[in-house]
Image (cartoon, rainbow, N blue to C red):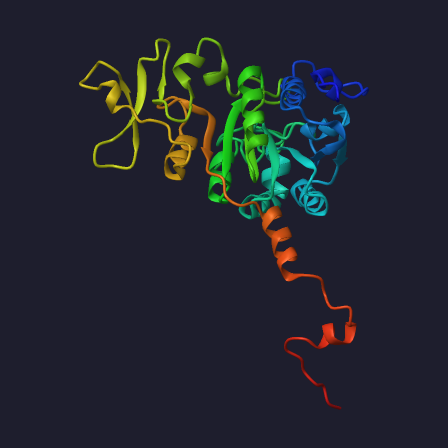
Amino acid sequence: MATALTPKDFASDQEVRWCPGCGDYAILKAAHKALADLGASRENTVFVSGIGCSSRFPYYMSTYGFHSIHGRAPAIASGIKMANPGLDVWVMTGDGDGLSIGGNHMLHVLRRNLDMQIVLFNNEIYGLTKGQYSPTSRKGTKSPSTPQGSLDTPVSACEFALGASGRFVARTIDTMTPQLVHVLTRAKQHAGASFIEVIQNCVVFNDAVFANFTAKENAPDNQLWVEHGLPLLFGRQREKGLRLVPGKMQLEVVTVGAGGASLDDVLVHDEKNRVQAVMLAHLAPPAFPVALGVLYCDPAPSYTDEVYAQVAAAGAPSEDLGALFRQGKTWTVRP
């Protein structure tokens, strides 16, 4: 009987080199623990990354790994999974790598529903290349490439994933280890493409950009941790909730027990409801809390399984190459 692996067994012998205080350290530790909790095997696990601070991840995992090219990690991971569907494939990417040059690849791996876990580190900045604004940077972000402030409308990572027909979409925070481990575990247990946005602090180029909901003093009133089947409550005493505005498809914050609002008025989280997930993904302070946890999970047949089933149904090809070339529609080219 094989000995169960510990989180330390998934750590490589390489020196971990990120900026002191970077949220990537916490994500790395959470990945080690999640794999141990899942009973994963090192020889059956592959981490694939593109380019960016997050893309150093494969070096620090005692598993197989590819440090690939900018934005192309989903495409390379797709090839790995299709060549060997028995492998457990993880894509580690950032908001720049995954949603800028890699946006097209990210779109297609999600809509195809290949069986893999995609973890996107979102620090709303290009950290590796010294602080230029990224696709998720907020309007007004001042950076070396936008010295007078960004004019771009930012991409919402979770809304993008939902719009690309992602079947599992979650959001969590780098330093909240128990919740992060839980989300990574849920993602692995999901059959198909899993997309996890991890809110990650860049201490050098974008420090405290998420402090309005991650700082200890702000968290209770600005974090909404969702759980399937439970009411959408938050606040220091869980006295606040979300409800649908009567007659409208929009959310509002109510205080339970005040203004005629009761617990029965508070919306219950349904992780199979895509419309609700989109509304939750869009919420932001100061008017609303940030929705965290598994926003959407509605499994469907994975592309990997369907391709292999199609190949099996087609049967072995003819051994007669001439007959194979001439089957179906053919044309005779005359001089």
